[in-house]
Amino acid sequence: MDAHLDRVINICYRYVLNRAEAEDLAQDTFVTVYQSLSTFREDANITTWIHQIAVRKSLDHLRSKNRQKRKGFFSRVLNLNDPEVEVAAPAVKNPSHILEEKERRQHLQNALATLPKNQQTAFILSKYNEMDYKEISEIMELSVSSVTSLVHRAKKNLKERLTDYYLNNFGDSNILRKDNKEKSSN
Figure (tube, helix red, strand yellow):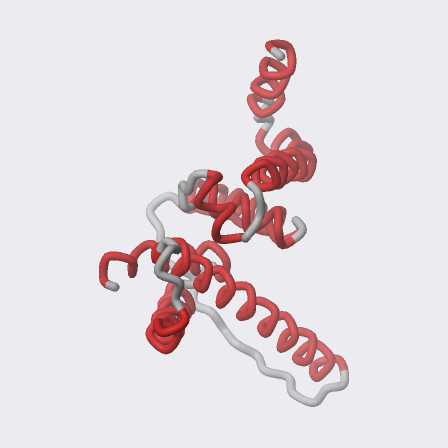
């Protein structure tokens, strides 16, 4: 199982964006794997099966977290609790660069969060976890062509959501140039 640990933590992290939560989800994944070994089909790929469990655990965690956020929001609106938390500013060497990079990453994560869950899952597994479409199709229990379509639509939707942001905030038109070259070569 140690051979799969880093990859499972990575998969979980791409969903929750928190190392401690990702490690907890990875632990839950391996507990489920251990408890379910008797139901594992010998003809299946164990790596794909483990990754599938990790994706499901991560998505379940996000759904649970969203329910808690809604509950917390209504509690604050109704003044049932009003926690104030002060967060110390981090010590950084180049604040503007780090802030800009953090803002870019946050905007990408926000855009990813707006994608339909199936597009989000296919994109994360493809781009962040560098899985091939066949492996993703097995994890998501879809055809390879469906995964290809999901990743393509995810890229298209992300481009639509991110283009204005990058042009307005960073003047980065490379995104548009690359896409236009791809369209003209087709």
